Image (cartoon, rainbow, N blue to C red; front, side, top):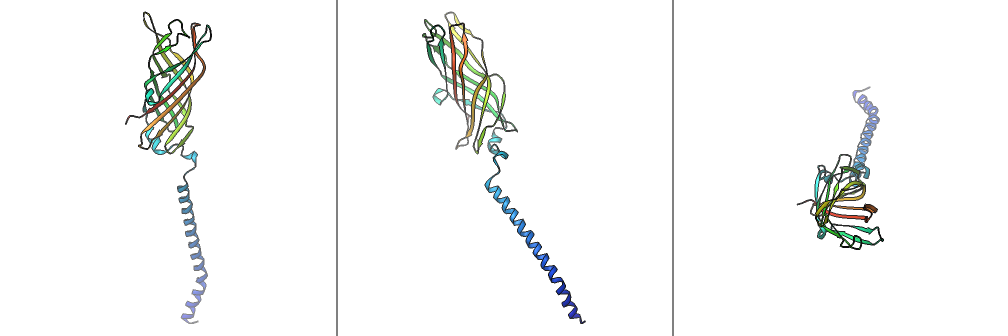
Length: 241
């Protein structure tokens, strides 16, 4: 066999092997491109909701306790209750004028909303003489305060909002004005006041919070004279710029 014939024979033998090798490399390249497409598609479509419960920016901003200043009544905050005379069942709506307060919240690493502080101040308010005859009763120094810190699981979220529901223990502190001065009354402990809270970032990036609470039914009675019913609280608060 001549030298040229030997080279030709070796080429014929190697050709199928080279063809298989090239096909294998091409197949791996296609598979790699396919995986990249899947990765890109997953990135475009976003992760499943359960894997990213809170927007990263919002989580970072609430990683440390953040204080929200409660607006007054003109700013949208309000509170109310019903007073009922036990002698004859006369009722009177009592509107509590919110004058300010503070709410301090954060998000912990498990995406739970942490309530560090809640304080709501209201103006003095008169309970109607129809409920407390003959001249009515002036309630003063009325505040609602968080009795103890609490953590609750995030209920819903979006790119710029976090919301949760919680049952918080709060103390209602107050006094009454009588002929000889102001008398402090024992605080009213509400052990499970139901709150809904949401925190969101507006178009300017400012953080705002909304808290609503409701305590249906009787929550306090005084010396067989009158009862307080149906506490409602709706607070608007924002981080100072």
